[in-house]
Image (cartoon, rainbow, N blue to C red; front, top):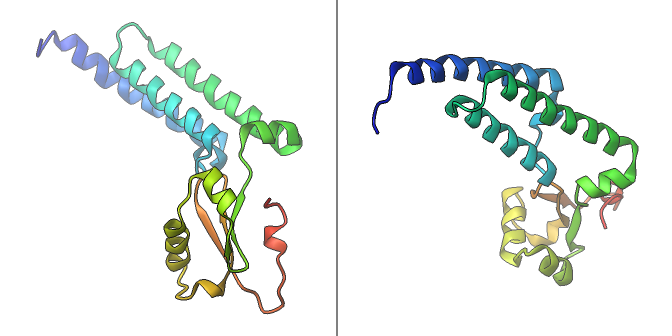
Length: 167
């Protein structure tokens, strides 16, 4: 129960180092997008990679080459889908959520807040964390596709071009 054999320990050390090294190489080759802030799609890929790494390291039923191929498949699919999502809006809409306007011109948008399950206190906290003492100094607050809040400060000219893609 506590110790089976030295073979199991040596296997974990060797396979763990090799699998970890392979994962690092794949992540570096695949680019920064693989490690970007998470939206739902990135979250699933990252969790799947972690699960695969754990299976390769701990399970005697999964050999190293199977784990390396699984890494390549997951990262390859993520690369292909993100590439397609840049070119085709349909795929982008399936993979990524759209940013949501939660606060606009001094008004809390309660319907949007309800839909996104965001409380007024969270919006106020986002405004404070952006260094604003007065809520009136915020032009808008957006819930981004990765779940973070963006606070758009009022501009001198009244331009709102940063909000162009926000519904």
